[in-house]
Image (cartoon, rainbow, N blue to C red):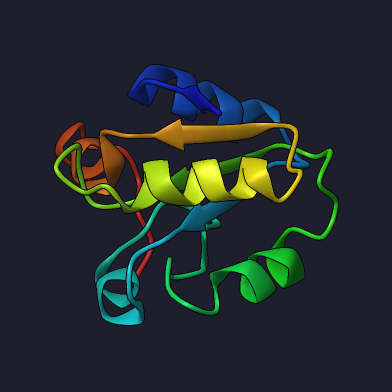
Length: 108
């Protein structure tokens, strides 16, 4: 797992078509707003099964994030994905609050 900044996240989203972006919060939080193109895979008891459906190729890059640096769901999800054999996991620890506060585009 590699922890990345907002600017690195933006570059990754802008430049990598094969990137899968995953918000690990509950569906209610995802519906409020999320990063462009993000999929919702809550970090819960179904995470292992659901992440493999959303990101079946464990060699392709996956970016995970949650609400903010105070949220520990994305680091936990990233570590779990590495345990499952994912090779290129990025954790945007500052999360979607940081993204939105910077005036970057979100979807809802």
